[in-house]
Amino acid sequence: MDIELSASMMCANYAHLEHEVKELEAAGIDSFHIDIMDGSFVDNFGMGYQDMAYIKNSTCKTVDAHLMVRKPYNYLDILFRLGIDIIYIHPEVDPDPATTIEKIHNAGAIAGIAINPGTSIASICELLNTADRVLVLGVNPGHAGRKYQDYVDNKIETLISLKTKYNYEIFLDGAVTPERIEKWSNKGVKGFILGTATLFKDSTSYKTSIDKIKNRIGVA
Image (cartoon, rainbow, N blue to C red):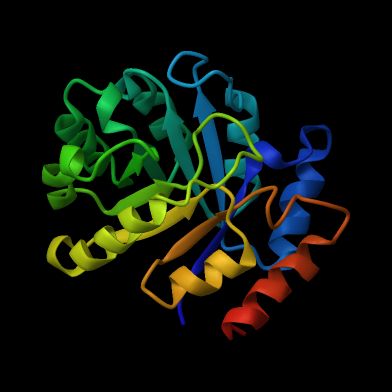
C-alpha cells in the first residue's frame, strides 16, 4: 500500500523548529504540511514567511502549503519563490480558481483544491478536471484539535467514486486518527495530514507514532 503521511507543522514546537524537522524526518514522515491563514477566511493566523522558508530549506522532502486565505492568488508568488511543491486553495474564496490552478501548474507546482466540511462537491466539480489533489477537511478549519464532522465521510466516499474519472489523489486533514487512516487508505485515500490526533498529541515520540500507523496498515 502506497500512502503519504504528512506532518501538520502548525502543531509543531516553533521554539525548536530545527529539532522538529529533523526528528520528523528521522521518524519516517513523508512530507511537511504548512497552514497559511489570514485571520479573515478563518479566525486564526498561520505560519510566517521565515518559518516556511526554514522548513523548506531544511528538508529534501515535499512541502505543501494550504492556503486558508481570501484571494489565494495574492500569495502564489511568495510560495513560488520559496519553492513550495504543492499548493492547496479554497475555490469558494477565489473569484477565478481555474486561473489560479493554471498559474500553479505553470510554475511547476502541484495544484490542489481544499474542501471544508460545509463545501459541496457540486460547487467544485468542474475544477476536478484540472486539480491534481483534493484535500478534504474533516474538521472546521482554523484550529488544531477540533472535532471530526462525521458527515464528511459521505463526501470522501463520493470523491473516491469520482477519482478515476478525474485522475486526482485524495488527502484527508483534520482529526486524522490511526483508525481513520486504516479505514480510508483501504478505500483509496492517498495521504493523511497528521496533527494533534495522532502525531503531536502527547509525549510519544514521532517515530513511535508513525511506526504504529504503518504497522496498523501493513506498510514497512
